[in-house]
Image 1 (cartoon, rainbow, N blue to C red):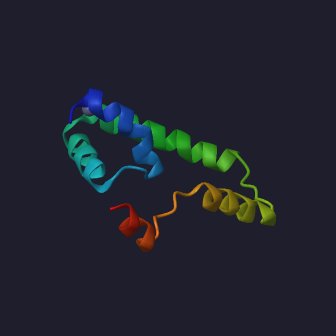
Image 2 (image 1 turned 30 degrees about the horizontal axis):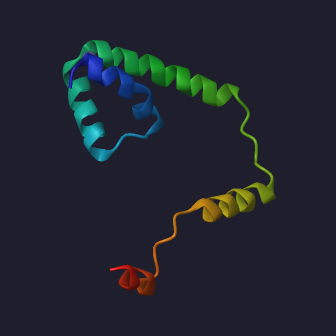
Length: 88
Ligand SMILES: [Zn+2]
């Protein structure tokens, strides 16, 4: 990994959204790149300030059930075992 490939992963790293493989490669790059290490520190500080500055709101109770109903409605259902056997 170099700075050009590390930079797009910086925000995902701060959010904890990297895969294990990406995280390991990113950390190896930070160990050898003071520029990216300083950039990460600056971005972590900004993220920390923003988390404290923006009030965290509790979503309404019905929101989770509505979202999950939509997810389940749009989920791709696995074919039934009888359906697969019939098409083969
Ligand atoms: Zn770098």
